[in-house]
Image (cartoon, rainbow, N blue to C red):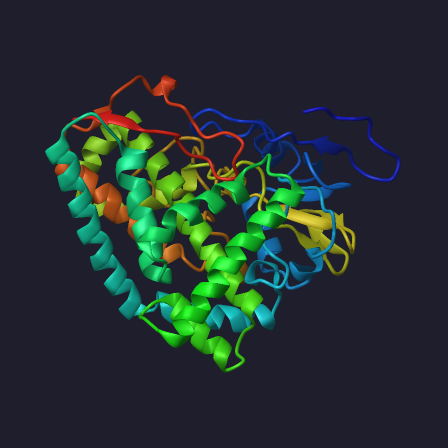
Length: 405
């Protein structure tokens, strides 16, 4: 990171290169800013100009919930960013403000209601048990990321959306292209057109042949005029990316942390009722992504942490840094599976709080619980410092997680 001389028109702009990081190491740039300059100006590898980065817990909550900060106004602006292309499509739920955002979130709320979550919990539990039996029958070694977590997360998202199993390979290829840091703007737009066309076709098919899945529900809502095709596609893509990539990476990282903290894991194995608390601590501790997510645009001068962010400026929040705020969490850089402190912000805050948070937590609890129950001798099959981690991608996680038992 370089720090150019302080310009006469405002505070210094910090260059944040967002380079690859090993394991669960925390990015030094947002970490330093959390402690030294919690509302700071940054410049990322792509886009133009600068943006504000907010890292402190209470400030992050304030920005995330302030209606004067708009996602919709980011459309068409070359805002400094981690990737050369914008992940969230214009007109979709990720770049919408109320009342449009409220309308769209209400449409998918039944998907995560009690009946569907109960069904998905049982489906996920059965799939995890079956996958565990395959591993046990085959014998060690195995790759937890590719042989257990990845296939299970793909199965759950396919069940939720109604994506045929035969199509998951294509969808996963698009997923990799969208989330790669080196995907050019033109290539990113091409991938988005392909995945948009796929879900538009799937929605047309489900309109004529409905099933008990989210795409069928969205297709029915579109037929009534409750949402448009771009909005339908945006929600399907958002949930697909989270299910295939974010869940896979974070649960694999959780397994890695359990395997590298054997004392805490032994206590958890002896008290399985503590698993939900442990999952929340893992969510708090893990720096889930490389760089930042979606920015917002200030529609007025806004004071954050004693700093005035001018109207029209772009603002990012960094949830992993907020989860390490020492004003909220005791000894925040230490993993403590028995921790019982303020709620983490791993799923965001405010109107754009992750729609699939409950499902992601459910998947993590079932997958980790299954491993703890059926593999009492589970251990890394190679030294922890030789595990390869994904680079050049939005979400962080192990490339592979070789284990034995």
